[in-house]
Each structure stands twice: as C-alpha cells, then as structure tokens.
Length: 122
Image (cartoon, helix red, strand yellow):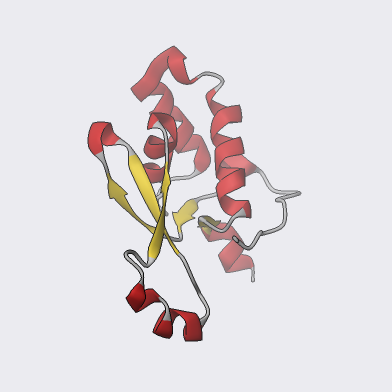
C-alpha cells in the first residue's frame, strides 16, 4: 500500500531535520491523525476519489507519536526534538533518543516524512 524508502545509513540521525510529507488533524487529548491519500495515481484520483467518503486514510498516533509528529516542522533537528519531548514528558518517554529515532525511521521508510538534509543532497 505504501511505498518504502531505503534505510538510512552513514548519517548522524540526531543532526537530521524531519519535515512532514502529509497533512494531519488534531483529535481529542492532543492526539494526531495523519491524513494519507488513498490513491496517488492521477486516473484513480480523478474517477474514484469523488465517489469515496474520504480521499484520505487516517493513521492515528499515540500521545508520544503525536508530539513527535507536531515537532517535525522542518525547523528543529532530531536532537532538539528529543530534548523538547524529554522536558515535556519526563521519564515517561525514556529512552527518548532510541524511541524517537525508531519512530522517525519508520515514518521515513513509509514516506510520511523526509529530511531536509537528504533533500539538499539530491
């Protein structure tokens, strides 16, 4: 269903700056649902999407994922985001670096986010 990016190698993950690729809506209790388009094929978008209830699939995130998603605005690197999440959630989110880097790796692999530094490299 989703296209996959390759794994990141030979980069310092904490220096990368994540950028969201999709829109989102904020639900109750500060939780986020990422809006992923059902189709990217122009033909399907033109003929099928108008007949569907919603052109997007909602991917619901938990409170930590929602906070990390909202901070991926293209202005802060992963280290800064980890520091902010640690001050926001305290010991509850530890080990913060491992959790956040794994979360962003999964988002990157499924093209929910990209990284500013990797775009500049191309």
